[in-house]
Length: 267
Length: 72
Image (cartoon, rainbow over all chains, first blue to last red; front, side):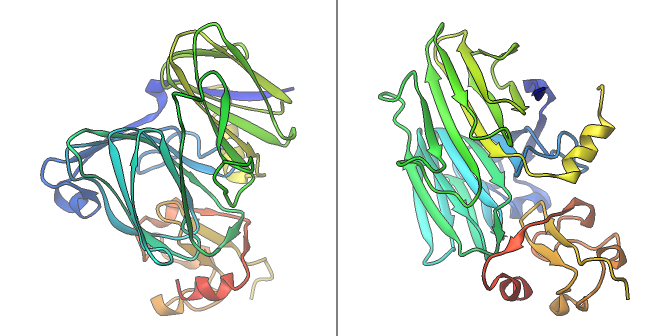
């Protein structure tokens, strides 16, 4: 029997974080810059919401408002951080290895594995607001050498197909985890099947734009669903210009997530 | 001395790890110190995330990982 959950847009953790007071050391763009963040997992100070999905701990739908806004330099270890840019321009700076300054625009994305340690800063330096989805994953091993890779999703040419952006396909960015991120931009009335690697894998489907039917669930804009114990899922596009992120991952045997599910059973 | 296996915890704010076997000698926590024995008001030395937002994980080290964790 398959398992699933649904997270509606409004049920995510919605935060607005201003670059003021103590926060201005973390949020860039003082005094008027602010970040809005809608988190699918692990949100707010006391960790409301589902703790994660497989090794995913953060799925954050974020906007950097105002030129100069973003996150100032801060350290990470171990987490694998992916960013997918949808609008505006993201300047990513990290100190891992020889150091990196990268500018990413709509369709560009990166995978930054912090491993044994590196600082990074995420900034929007252009006048337009920057929209991105951030994904944080637990790695397969701790304290790996840090890595940074980036690529581009060509939404003009790759329409009406599920395109793997991160994972083990040729052309996808490599990742130190049994996980694949795909994107589907498609027109109404088209239907797509996504076959999972094994029944030990699960899939998290996020409808960024448009609406889709996934199994017997209709997802509107920014709704999402997690499904596991299935061989394949079907995604039927209900509205033109649907833009769907699909994250397939090994379902790690995670006591923390199971405990949360037991405590929230029937809610 | 407890015979329970040493636990490994990860800061959900930044990925900093606390390994009970290693402790954090630079921060005054001796090797072998159990997570339960660290004060509740302790915060991540890298990012200030409170203790209750660390998650216990069962993830192995990459080669050389324990040495890197000790000096992280």
